[in-house]
Length: 267
Ligand code: DGL
Image (cartoon, rainbow, N blue to C red):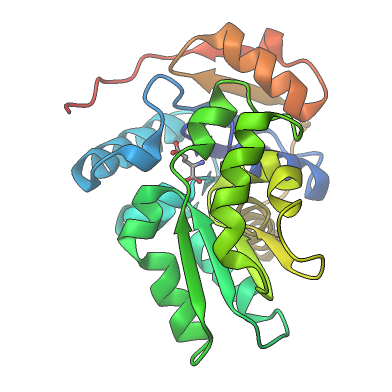
């Protein structure tokens, strides 16, 4: 039994989709969550900026004495895998477990990847999926509008702006066997995305895949244990995060959110 917390971080609300899956799998674990809301969206940042932020985020979450880290962010998982692999605390991204899951889905149709502009630009998910599923058609789609919409409160499945974006981004994916939600924010708007996809297209959540990878690691190393505590850290305004997070989680976290300082990233 190891009661040290699991560290989870993302640019903002997206990683809460991973936290939800972690909670479902391991209700007893203590979790420290960091949402870098003062510097999002990550999907619009350059590679040097992402490397800088990944290093800072890893150090920040590690300073809370965590036993493992889930980088609940497709953008960092795809752009900075070397930083995750080389970090002093065991750190898991969402890329590898997502590809393993996608490769197991039966069917002959194309495989889609919905992700941020920086993730698609890195080519990391596409390369890994091509290697795992040779000969299969892969369709990567950057969705630059989704994270800003979600973080500004346009996450309701009937929201006209959200539905308009969802329809455009999913248009190339009709007939797909499976579509990877390669950005952890997209699980929040899964219903809007699903509305425009074929009924039998399987949606794979990168966030859930990452959460399962952490569970597998903790089990294999016999590191499970805790009292179900949660701490939420944000670099932006805590009240706004708490409000939107409560809608997603279906419970209030207002008394557990606090602001932490982060460095300004040079443009
Ligand atoms: N949720 C993150 C991801 O999975 C970052 C999104 C963003 O800030 O652009 O890519």
